[in-house]
Length: 156
Image 1 (spheres, helix red, strand yellow):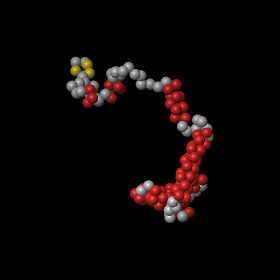
Image 2: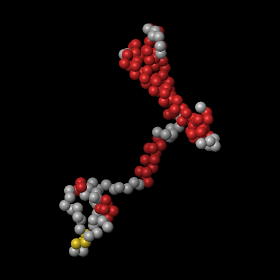
Image 3: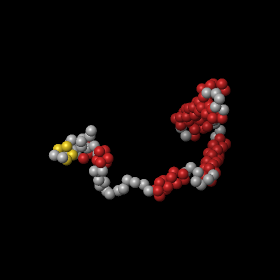
Image 4: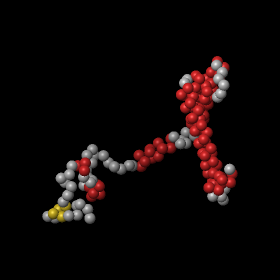
């Protein structure tokens, strides 16, 4: 039973005809085929469009082989080399007792050193549960004889 089920003189009556267009329920119009597209667009995809969407989704994953992996490793290694070179030059110019946290506080600002320290603490604190979870997943996949909760608790 919908709003178009009532008949008036043999014709269907729309009870929401007095409502503005943005407040009407157009779902029944689409089902009945009464809804006309204002810009005459088709709402169908052909085989070519579906294939292009699939190829576009696979480009970032493995279409170009291991070349993207080597390129990313090379860029990462270059950035890491530059950072290490800068840290070495700052340490030689003005040695600071402590690690990179003290260097950030000495060379830039004490607030940056404070935040670098807390950032490193959270990194190390969250790394432990992540590694336990990863170990649990690997052992659960490889063995599968022990349940997930008992695997991590047996090893720790």
